Amino acid sequence: MQFTVAIDGPAAAGKGTISRAIAREFGFAHLDTGLLYRAVGAKGGNPVLAAQELTPDDLARADLRSLEAGEAASRVAAIPEVRAALVAFQRDFARREGGAVLDGRDIGTVIFPMAEVKLFVTATPETRARRRWLEADEKSASYEDVLNQVRERDARDMGRADAPLRPADDAVLLDTTEMSIAQAVDAAKASIARKL
Ligand code: C5P
Image 1 (cartoon, rainbow, N blue to C red):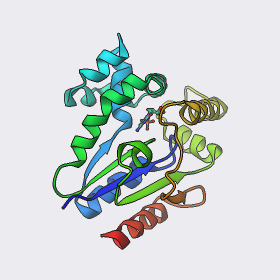
Image 2 (image 1 turned 90 degrees about the vertical axis):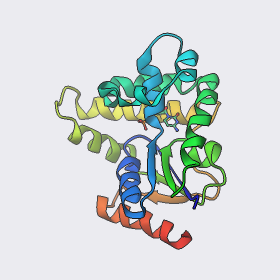
Image 3 (image 1 turned 135 degrees about the vertical axis):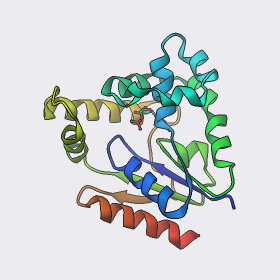
Image 4 (image 1 turned 45 degrees about the vertical axis):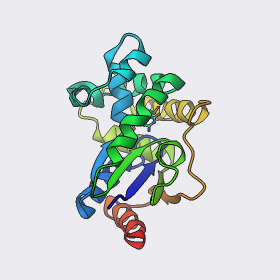
């Protein structure tokens, strides 16, 4: 069976948690596509070459989850040649048997316009900044700093010319601002169960 779930949305909306829970529930493979852009940003040098030469090993680097890696990712993600070089990796991933869930910014709009299920997961910038701030081990940045970073990242991801962050016309919107993790996961599972 080939069954693709596309989960898009801004940083810290809950995409990762929801994607992992869905993968576990339905036995799907999961690809966090943000990691591809983080790995390209972290490699340094020419980002287009870095994207063309990306290997699965590059995704295992320990430093990819940092705030700095996220910033670098969002800068290289605005380069059309970088995005183009990562398309095949993402489409190949979903071609495997047994279903796949991919989360990112343009999965439902560009990578898999024909995905069986598309979810657009959002929350207010304040809620997302609070979550990011609470989950940081060291409170080196203030809540206000984190909120500013969230807003800047949103503006860059939504404002770029190539594959900007936006919901696909046929995406199911999931606003997690007032939801617990369990509620958000249940809502996502219900959208998928309806299509299986
Ligand atoms: O989701 P994550 O925070 O890891 O993504 C890091 C950055 O990579 C995003 O801010 C975005 O600029 C970029 N990205 C993208 N398209 C994707 C996934 C991530 O442009 N499918």
